[in-house]
Image (tube, rainbow over the protein chains, first blue to last red):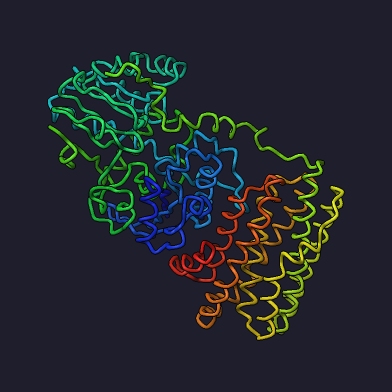
Length: 346
Length: 251
């Protein structure tokens, strides 16, 4: 069995969905009620791979909402309780979706292995970051030429380069794509210098300097609501890949010849017959999902029951190639610019 | 281009940096000072509730046995276990030099106690099991789970032993209700509507004392809801039915 741990994008949204699902006790509750709500196993589903193999899985809503980010004890409990539920249900491999893996990493939840009478087995969980990184790279390779960007001459900026996904994307771009130049932007300078040394390439720079030079910008750090960017200073055409969470780049970059692509989203070859991605606000919810979720499915298809993506900076090129090949084999593909023309101003 | 745009603004979690540091610092476990007067004062009531709770559990299981005589042996075993727990928690109070306020505790349980007695007289086994095997057990296990994280070393060890036992016998009432669900569901729902709000009130009533012991009200309530939901799920109720039952906790 595979598992997906997800959450709503806002408190209002969460209440609306709870009401839809018949969870009236929390749908009518205030944020305090949600802070005390147990995780919910919302749906079971069967998925059939392009190879014909069938697997079963569950979607667990952690009852976390982004409004709880400032209450670290609450956020921590939501993630750990959802993980405990997944393990108690006997799920082999569960992906930590949305803020879940970010909270796990940033709040250092590794030190909280014992949850009530359950000792969490980390090998049952994956951040899904390897698949996300691979999908973002593929989205870049496939879609840049479509809008007239020649990869061999392209300058690519990775914003959030030292993160788990960001560093993997940099590694792939340097070693696998033959791009002209890689600009690396991150909050912390020390890991950035280390990454540059490891890659033996790439230029460390600031966001303000990177944006006007870049033909392609990969965002793997989330955008705060308050920032505004003058699109006149961007190159045209420009491909923006929104690999952060939540995905809000299309609100920021609207302009002619600026192409915004939702990063790290894949499409399955067949309808899945679930409701869970409607909850995740996918545009084609029967087929589309976050690549991190798909990673749990792929690992289950492959009977590869291990915490494939775990910790920071452990994503190797070999792992990306493995998960990428399995992804294609089982019927996943990265969504491209042609999928959602309404978010584009071409 | 806005020059003031800094990469430091990029992290969604950045505003929580201080919290994150706190959370990763082991000292932030914030064990309370077990020797202060305010701690002992709060402990005199919490400890009494726990002792009284175990006594009630003992008496309730003996009473339940009168309704299902063929389970006498099993229920007597359970009751004996609860008495062992009571002794353990009495030792915890003594270890801290605290005299448990048993009068307060008896009053604390009086309504739930009264409802149990009425159900017993009427022979309403489902209601008795809901009160003891679901609500009181979930209340106890949630409180113990939270307490273990902030207890003094002596009490921590005792409580860990108790929790192990509690996880064992939470199953008893569950099993009976599961087997008889088709005939007892209606009574279960009705009894829940009356008694779950009492648990919520009891939690609210001890919240201040609990917080002196570094037990967070939100965490207590969440632990309770998890244990409660788990039990109902085991019994065989579906998500919507559980949601409907849990509703009684917020109205």
